[in-house]
Image (cartoon, rainbow, N blue to C red; front, top):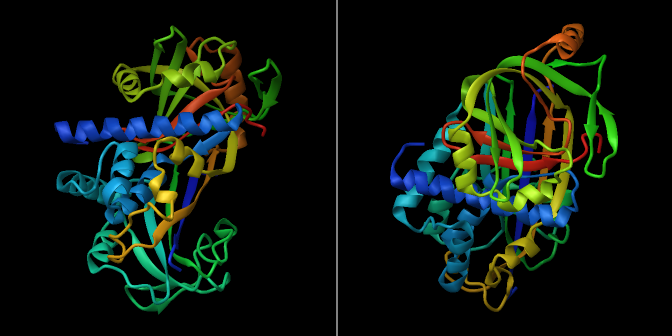
Length: 402
């Protein structure tokens, strides 16, 4: 099975009345990485040490779409949370180019970042808003009847009907979306699927002993490879030592960055507060190529977050207030506000190979003198665009069997 990430962000908005090297590119990548880490740290605080995955790319895409509509204090709060605003022409054009590049990446990678705005039939939209959304990261506008949960959506730009995508009207994510006051919702999705640059084999005959946070040792399914990888040993601002490993996907477009405490007694929540964009940048620029035995647990994580509390804690408050929200860019009038923010994420990590390689892998585990990287305790992962550091998803594995 191929490594797979599928993430969906759902934003329900109701009507109240009814890579380069330029300073700009480097600055934006740092801001986006900082946003990714801030989102991770906020989500980690609510998950009580369990497995989770979240997609900063998906969340930021929907907030960028809302920036096109936001005015006044609502716009300022969104810009402060993201660290930038798409109302700035330089930022807008740079990110537009980046999204096109990511969408067109086809070297062994299936990746799509898209956003669909579902509108209540009859809702009047600003032509400027429609134009901005339609050219932003493979986004589209569709009509929907929110009073009918099982309605078929219509593609507004083409006027053709098509079945619901599964995350639109009628899906479990919609919850209270059938209310008659609903006028607009935003569904942002990010899907990633690729083969490893160097294939893993399954260590079927010798599971990996994985030490959980409270000392419990589990025997978990593992995968193995001997390969040239990017590796480094570092310490954070508090002195915690970590091993950092980067594994490439086919085509070298994307990579998986793993952060593993060297000491099994160091919990991840001691390291997480010290992760910053500059720390990640420093670590990745100092990785060295090395031939290593790499052992990773297979895992599958699926969860769902209510992001409203997180965004409110960041200072995005007006957006959710029917009296204060200013989203006049949608139609030129007041009345729209965001009532729900739900984030659904799934990530699966597995080898691509056959069990016939298992005997060789076990032999290497027992006899090889090659330096080894064993993810046999809780670790942090970042799925990134290899050259720029654009963070598709970020998460934590505390127990591969959960």
